[in-house]
Amino acid sequence: MNRKDRVIARGEISDHCHVVTGDAEVSRGDDGKIIVMVGNEGAILRHLLESQWIEGNEVWTKEHEDIKLEPGNYTYISQQEYDPFTKIIRKVVD
Image 1 (spheres, helix red, strand yellow):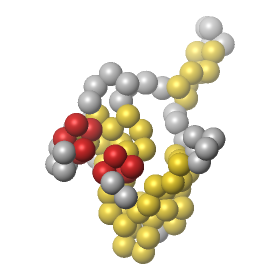
Image 2 (tube, one colour):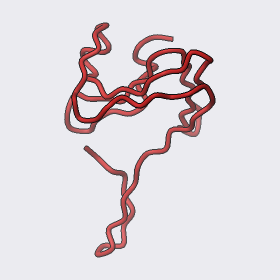
Image 3 (cartoon, one colour):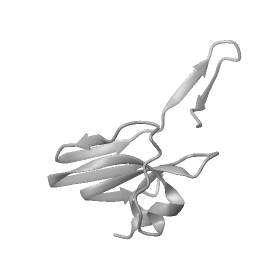
Image 4 (cartoon, one colour):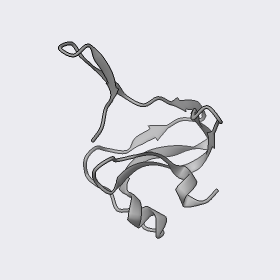
């Protein structure tokens, strides 16, 4: 699995991304569903600069702490927000 395949979400404005590191495989379905399969050694969900990650470096954005993932299967679900004034549900962007 190459480094780009481990990116599960990208920032829309800045150069940050959410990356799975460690004992994990990332699978993408034809429907866009992202499944993270974490092995016995566990994995970490990190918030890194994407351009640096692709080049082989891990530069933490310091926006939030790493999240430890225990062995198992995880489905990535994009965060959404509801605007009660417009009555529109939209994807959260950052």
